[in-house]
Length: 117
Length: 187
Image (tube, rainbow over all chains, first blue to last red; front, side, top):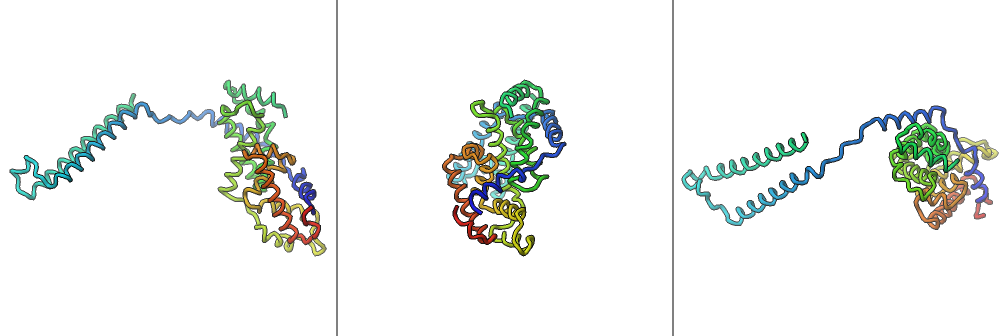
């Protein structure tokens, strides 16, 4: 066996197969079904951009607040001065939770409004 | 195969007449199934891969730039798909080192019959490392046309030539061991 033998064997037409008789019909059926399927809805980047930008700004603002709070140390808030000492962390947690809830609510409302347009 | 017929059918499909794609399928189903069969040696899987290739061609008809022949574009698309499919689910092949077992288990004592020998050679092609296998399959599929094989693989001709040469060297070395014919050495 030489390169010529390899050429003869590997280019032989005996190596070929005939497609089955139903292949063309099956391909066309798949293509028709594909054509009948509505194209996927593209993500509305234009509409989402203001919301995403607002979320980004809010996130940066929150991070800045946290950093500021950490740098200042445990400075009591004016509201908490009249409360017993063990109330201070609770009031702070409630404040942060309220802010988080408010942001979530705004975000959900905004997305629902954009989606319904 | 007529390039003008392909062009006319594509224009009709792009104008919304999906049934015109059937002309393309009928003209190219044979070559696409055969190419797939050379990659997997399984008729059923070859037809499935060819069907997927037609679907992808239909989806990306808009990407066909008329600078290249439709057939060149179609073969490149199909080759790309088949290579990925074969990488994802490799066909049942025997490793090059174990090809001798085919002979021991399947052939008569007086040596391999011609048909068996051809089968061993084709099996050996499938057992080649991927880059040599792809170049070898495409070269023989395109009737030993290096430039057509290079276009289908999206590689420079020099790279395909080098891979083909290396693939044949491996085949000759392994098959010399397996078939035991000294004249197998470099022709």
